[in-house]
Length: 368
Figure 1 (cartoon, rainbow, N blue to C red):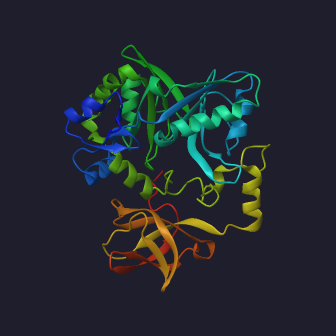
Figure 2 (figure 1 turned 120 degrees about the horizontal axis):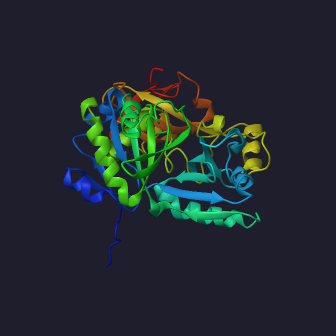
Figure 3 (figure 1 turned 90 degrees about the horizontal axis):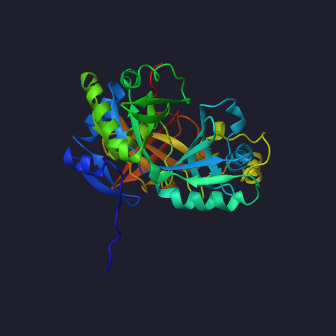
């Protein structure tokens, strides 16, 4: 019997040194928590937290046909990136309307940078190579191993990154990109994140990731910075109503069914999955991802069944305690007839059927 060797980020040894609890996540040896998920979640909501997300994938696309290629493989409209240093959220869509992955596209001065989910790096890379044969002047590079990627998230993120970059971060708008040289290290940073808070995702040469982590931690000490693991990353994104691939987005669940229609531009030119998504919209969605607020203290979890009386109608795709909002929360996939705000359902949790109601997405939204 053989065991698979887990991949490690450039910060794996540091995480262990500072007491992280490490787990296998999508084949990576990653920190799930340091002090506690609750403490880390609250630090991001009220102060600032730092995450190692170096397991994410980065693809660089260049060539004269780069713009047209990206436009063809994503559901959003890359033409909205009217100048360099802008970014957007989008998805790769299958011809049948299912989701290959969700991602962020950055338009930089001389290329497009695509950031994809760690669990889908190989699948996404094969998908892009398969589509690239239709374009004459296109160069694809899998740069995933070249980057360390840190997420600095929370109300104090901008002041800390400003302190590190000499004031080059705080003035950026949401979903824009900047660069700076920090102590001899060239870094890039997008004003993006996966927590529902203000913050940045910071691209660093992989061999310099620990240096920049330590510098951010040092600058953040006066602001209550906490290292945060995958546990808090998940509770934060769920509370903020953000989908997770493999849960609210899958090969079978389309962006429209997941409630991401705002990021699908059917009116643009041809793109992969367009015809299937148009048919879904014209016929009406048969099912949708909804937000559920459940009663009591029992926590809904992925796979738990959702009922209308004794009739099973769907299942939980993600669930947890809403740490900041103060009540149990979940995403669920249900028939569209049950997607109306205020709709009452129940969730089978162990031997109980716990009442829940459909609520507006997101559960938590930061104050502007």
